[in-house]
Length: 112
Length: 116
Image (cartoon, rainbow over all chains, first blue to last red; front, side, top):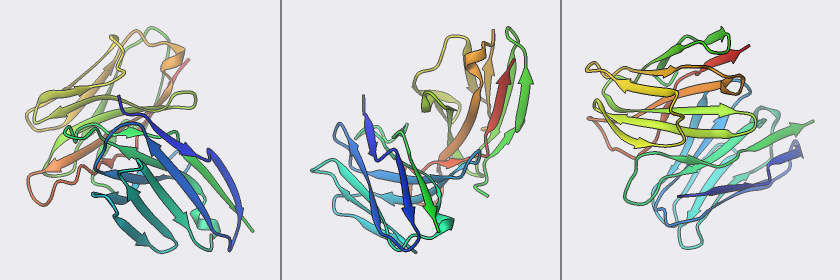
């Protein structure tokens, strides 16, 4: 059973600051996904990382994947209030590519 | 808008009752997934269907069942409801016949179930 752990669970940061959210997973997985969820809303796909060393950037967010270390990171650069949300990482078991197992989520609060 | 449609958006019912949640996947997607999100359990995978057949099963209770119909829409049936079943139920879809299949899931807006 794939287990996905995120840290921190809660992050309060000031606007303009940088920070990184970490996602560790327990077994071999060749891909990793990041999602964003606003309170009470749906999950929005942010990044799809499909291979070791993959790096993707969108605005102030950058995600990377290290399959050997079983680690993905979501880096936030110069945070703004609009980034306040809960961020989830998720991974499938290699070879199944069916269900995604989600991490516990990191609730990000960006303050002025 | 992900293209995944779920109904109803909100549902309030009593313990012991039965409800049906409905999901229409994105046009062309063959796979439908059901997830339950609650405060204490997080986002839990329930079940996956692919082109009408059950493909994977997660932490789905025996009181819950699902199916995917020939037109690819899916229904999640929850019976003998308990207070603890109150949650946000998401449907997601993936694996369309056109384009690359990255395994990315596209989520609907969810159905919020409140059991009183």
